[in-house]
Image 1 (cartoon, rainbow, N blue to C red):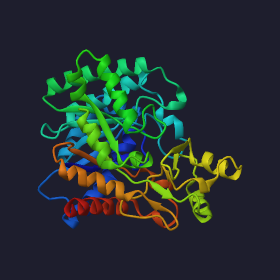
Image 2: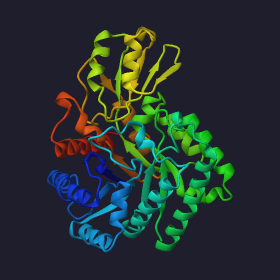
Image 3: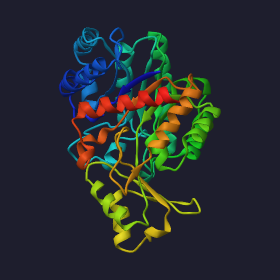
Image 4: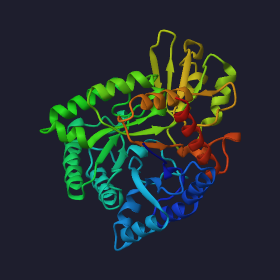
Length: 385
C-alpha cells in the first residue's frame, strides 16, 4: 500500500503557493517521519497532492512540470494521487456548496480533470500508478441531469485509458460519495455505477479507469458500517481507486450539553452535513450544521427523537473531541482492518483532515505535528490488526 496525506490541508490556490507548501510543510512532515523511522530513509516519500484548476493550468505551462519533476527527484519524493474534488478556492472563504462546482455535467470539470491526469501521467511512478479523486457527479440540491454526467465520465474513462497505454501507467479516477452528493451512501453508489456501466459501450474500461474514492468519514456519517460497505462495493466489481482515512464528529442529540458543544463547530467555510439516526435506524438528513441547529431552536425537530447524530467535520485521526462529543474513529479502524484482510483491494491511501484551519480549541496543534501524529496512528492500526 502507498500512504500519504492530502495537501489540501495547506492553503494554496496558485502553483507558486502549492510549491511553497510542498517546500515547507510537506518536507517538514517528511523530515519528522524520517526522524521517527516511519518513513524509510532509503525509500522515496509519497505525496498526496491537491491542485486547484488554476494551479493545474500553471503547472502545465512552460517548463514548470519539468522543474517539478526535478524537485521531486531532488527531494526523493513522488506524487501518487491528486485530490481533484475542490476546483477553486478551498480555504479562507465560503466553500460549502461551491466545492461541488463545476459538477460533472460541465465541460470545465472535464477539462480540469484531464489536466490533472496529464500531470500525473508525466510524474507518477510506473510501479505505483496514479489516482485522482473527484466529486460524486454533483450535489442533490443542484437537481442535475444525470445523462451528461454519465457521458462525461465515460469520455473521461477513454481519455484515462489512452494516457495509461501511452505512458504504461495504471491511472484511475475515484468518485467520492459525500452526504447529499448525487450519490452518497453504499446503496446509491451501487445503483449509480450500475447505471454508468449500462450506459458504457465498454464496461471493462469503466471498471479499470473509473472507481470509488472511499472516504471513511463520509460513509460513517451515512451510518454505513465499513466492512459490509466495502464488501458490497468489491462484490459489485467497483474498483477501489483510493481510500481516504478521515474521521467525523458524533454526538447524542438527546443530551442538551452535546447540542451546545456541537455549536462550537458551526463555522462558515465548509459544508458540515448532519445525519441523525432514530432508534428504529431510520435517518434524517440536514443540509448543514446551522440548518440542524436552527431546526432544534425553532422546534422543527425534537432532538430526543434521535439516538445519535453524525457531522461532516473532519477530526484528526489520533484525537478525540472533548466530551460529550465523540468521533467515528472506529469506522476508520474497521476500514483499515478490512483492507488488511483484502490486501490487493486498494493500494492508494490518503490521510485527509483538511479542516485544520477551523478546528476549535485543543484539537488544533501545529499542522506538521498533527499530520505526523495521524501517520503514527494509522501505522499503529496497521500493525495491530
